[in-house]
Length: 260
View 1 (cartoon, rainbow, N blue to C red):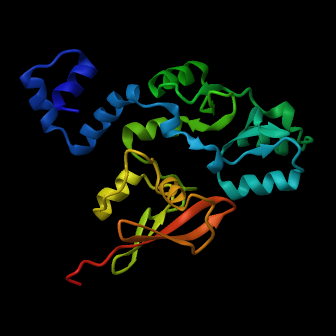
View 2 (cartoon, helix red, strand yellow; view 1 turned 45 degrees about the vertical axis):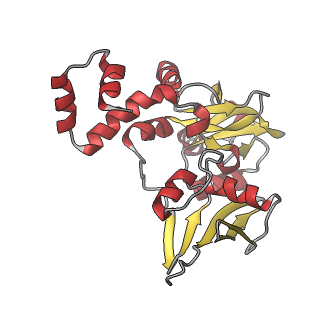
View 3 (cartoon, helix red, strand yellow; view 1 turned 180 degrees about the horizontal axis):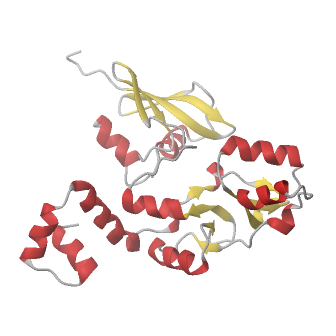
């Protein structure tokens, strides 16, 4: 997107003077403006926390299990389900739970959860942002075309599209790409495949896959196991860590050039 396109999208007009003013902005300010503009081109599915990475709470959890899971996650809001994850009955705010505990009242999850806000995963996030502000909610449950829960999207996810990643005190500092040797890298499976290809100068099918994990899963053609290896373009992709059927970390061993 050109500077002229950005200015037109924001202000519906462009002059050479305005373009020069945009040029004078710091790079992070330019990125923020681009982020605002691109909200209308971005869907919930692109920014949501996918179902497999979402921490859900069961309405039938006992109190100790409930508190332990909340403490482990470090989140402040949780979707609560009954019987199946596709049946989300509410959103638990930790501050609401704390009020109950402070009053020494019996924890009755169905009575303290807030009404869930469901949105289609195809919804544009600029529209979602307006809806969330109007309804004064900070979290929405994304559903697919069949009505199944596909993930959650928080106000923070939308803000990060504008200003970049927000690191809070509960976020673990994580390296998406960690070099551990000559031509050897440990990579988070959630890493955007296009970002990986650009960083490591690899020719990868970035148009076909969003994440490294999805790409590697397709290469295997089955559910892989830990330390299993598959090759692409002469490079080795090794499953380094898994959680159930979910790939967490992939080790990439780059093909050595003939000169090496």
